[in-house]
Image (cartoon, rainbow, N blue to C red; front, side):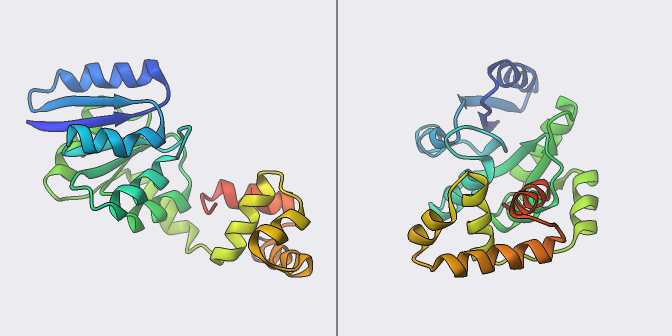
Length: 201
């Protein structure tokens, strides 16, 4: 029996997925959580074989949770469930050791097949998501550029970003200008939007 943890903030979807997976003879949903920051504790308590994580959750997104589980040495395999086909997400997920990447609108049979495959040590990647990631190429942004774009996207003023990162305001503006040039956009808000659309921040 493969023990599964489900993490999704949409209660109805989580309940439906749990019920459908429960019909599979070799799968057992041992825990359900609705927030990303509840996953690590639930993994420690229930010891699932596979954690199925929604990518967009309050508390912490699925990619951050996957990175946390990797860093904590959790033994469970991770399968990401997403309605976002952003190429950067797939690359970041792979870097975090995620073994499965399934579109949220996939049939339950596909999710069940993905769970079995990652449990057996294999990988399961949605073909369309994988093709998008290949076409998009590598993330051109440095870690510092991503950090500044994330803060900008959260509405943080340049002076505050400079103080938080121990940089001068001019240096912050230079990072933003470089990011804008790399993304081929005219302003910082367009840079934030473009980077988010690609899953790079």
